Image (cartoon, rainbow, N blue to C red; front, side, top):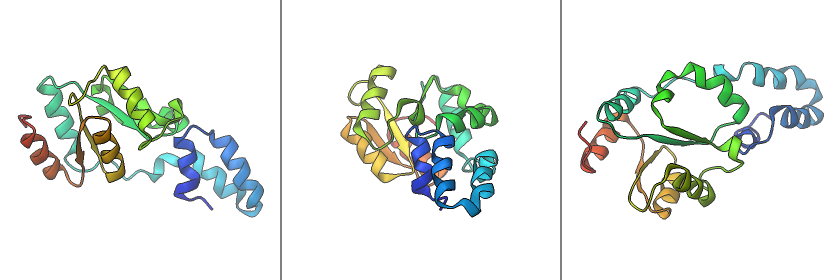
Length: 163
């Protein structure tokens, strides 16, 4: 019942109150658990992948401008953002739930190009989802499929970043 597909609706901009009401109507016996998902949502995060914050900080120390595009509920972003001070390094973040656009939709990359003032080849897009990386490449950016922090460091060094 509480599936990735159901939760992905939040990333696309649907409010939790709306999606949870629909789910409760379909599964009334589970109403308490469905409501708990929203209230305890932060507990679903395992934390950052080891080594990634150090890479973000190293790029910031090297004066590399950083931006983000994230598939994230606007409501849950408000809860999550204060728990991740590293996000302050990013000059701007496109949150899918605010924009009602999700990766890998080309429209979210077009929005990012415009908002971040980026042209062809001006950006390196990093994501753990290969479809999102392919969409960024189609948008004219370099793409790195993230697997581990050491691999990301190697890939960034190959592109000329001093890390």
